[in-house]
Image (cartoon, rainbow, N blue to C red; front, side, top):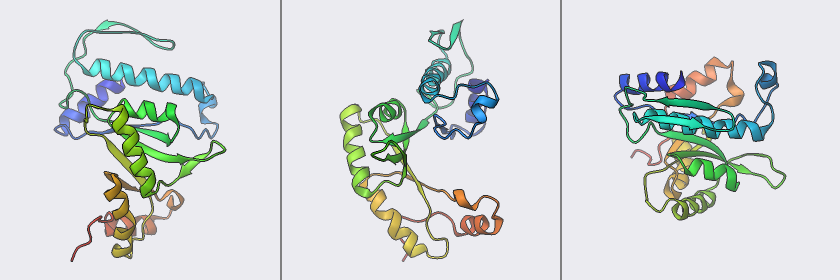
Length: 207
């Protein structure tokens, strides 16, 4: 179902779809209530298998799969997406967790959060972190294929210069996208509207 829906959107958009995926590391109790695994290891296995199946189906070639959790008899999935070799996949990851980052490195982009010493994560990456991440990726992706680093945070909607000053060092270090993450503004429509009207921060301030 997901493979079919994503191909439909990719074709309707002329090849502009990007798919962000995540393990669902923050479990609010919803997984167990609908019969889904709650432990992170199993969810990681399911995510890995799901991504392998998606990319195999998108190829448009005969494809079969036998994994720990999923099994597919041979099939040929058509039509293929507009984008080749696949629709770009961005993976939420914990930096510098090797296992988490290796998953992201297999695809087309990472949405990294910084992992703390106690295993927690969610802290923003600094420009130095981004440079280290770029060097780590270069060693594991020798083909030099494009790879996005997507950072998330909050910049002031009413101060474009300050917003630009915050994201510019991150862009110079190698970040390619910035997402405004107003997680604490859910339900505050006025605040959300102001951020949307202000537009995204510009790494290069206008003269």
